[in-house]
Image 1 (spheres, rainbow, N blue to C red):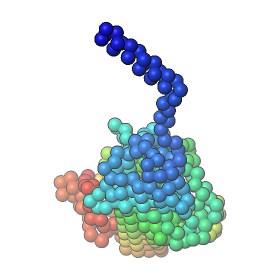
Image 2: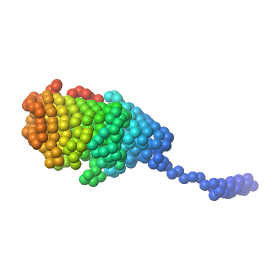
Image 3: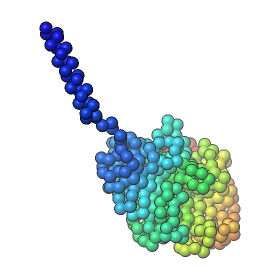
Image 4: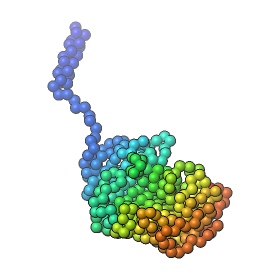
Length: 399
């Protein structure tokens, strides 16, 4: 009898459970959508979508950037010091974009930098896009220009615009290529204004440019670019800020490059060299160093297409069997450039100037600008960038 009662109870219970299941089905989880409306409204391991509220990425949390992450106008994305963001490799839609009127506050420190890197087991240049920031400062491309990648509007008249802070940040394996005309850089700054803080960046293994400025007035300080396939430091579109303490390097085993890589590439406007504002930046304390005999640089600096630039304290060095095609090139079919250069030095197999525009000032030969002690290399004090400013990267300068 006890057994029969027990089985009867089970049968009744099962009938009740089945009935409840049919009447009130349990919802199937659908995950997060592409609209991020609060701090809890996204999956750290599938980070993507439109940021419609102020949110923070916190150190100690594992993040995977799986597609585009766009900070919408009026909103702020804060990234804490020490945060590491893995970026899904192999797709051109993996990037961080900051709209006009939005802010990215990536506040790393020397002890706890913020890192963006590929999630690939064997990472390569171009595994993901990069960081794209749009602002409201002036550009000679118009007040409603559109970015080459990410589809952001940029431009305006607010030269003191503030797009936030990017400090002590590493960006690795950037430069995903959409097509021949659309490629990501490590960091792209479109019409970013002077109240924005950009300093202490380490950009490595990029498939296109390291850092590029498209118009704008922002000042950029302490940027190191290592093993960049195209240009290390690039500006165009009427950029008028200051770039200070910039160190660009190709390692000796680097063997991948574009057809026309340069240390510095400076354009104003390729369609109209007289369009205003004219690109007229000041570049101070800059080193362009090539250690790779397999990938000569086309030029140390190419200043063209209406640009009027000033370079102060530069070192253009080809160490060992490495070389440069030209030292400085100011000649271009779409408009020549004007350069005033002071306190500049060159070393090694660096070619002559290619003059079509105007170059004022001279570059002095210094065969001991870089010296070796075993495999370690040392740059003479006062020659280009101050390498000690990059101690936080833990990067060693070697042959």
